[in-house]
Image (tube, rainbow, N blue to C red; front, side, top):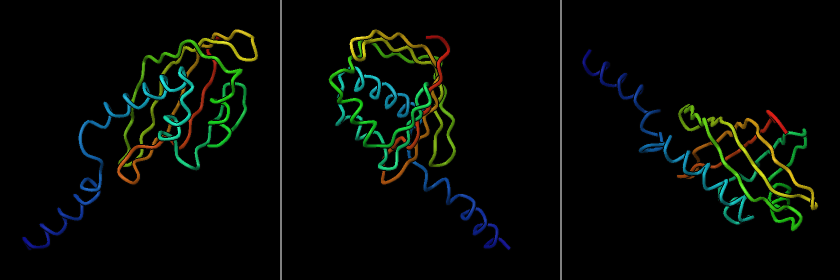
Length: 144
């Protein structure tokens, strides 16, 4: 009987053993901040390290882009962000998946037209191959 109890405990613990170690919430918050800094500096290489190959981005205006289009947009010389901040960020962990939500504020110019957006974001991350990768991002404007 004890042996069955030990086996059951081990089976129940296996999903936890496969989990990423340490302060995952803190790691994801740091990755979100790195994402913002990479956007300001238009560092597509840094962003490429953060997003999955099958990444999907849905923008506030309804435009949907994949991994390659998202990175091409960051490299676009007409895209000139000057500020990107996030606040009220919450991380919800589900084993090897995390949903990060919050409020963003971004400023800059695109095609020589200024923009100043405040909105909500939802980023979905998965822990795969020993690291977190964003698989989907969605933004919605609160005010333009």
